[in-house]
Image (cartoon, rainbow, N blue to C red; front, side, top):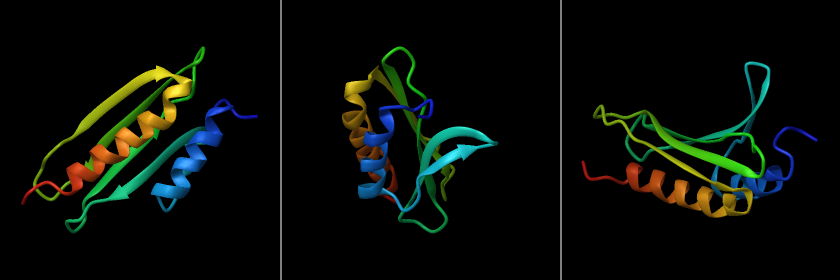
Length: 102
């Protein structure tokens, strides 16, 4: 079992429904993150999940690149049983960022 433990089932279910690729490693260490494309050319956003600690977990959403220089960032923290809701909220927020008016 990885350091993500029971969170992995929730994360993989979310990823299957919302992203093309779930990355599970960064710099040789366990990680959980995905990129979501924007609707504008070359825009990219990221949702990342930190490893759970003592039954709590954090989800981060941010812009990686935008065509107008906008920077977006939001963090959610809560008990592990709220992970699915946090991922849904992060996905909805990123989609809102991607659909912002020109």
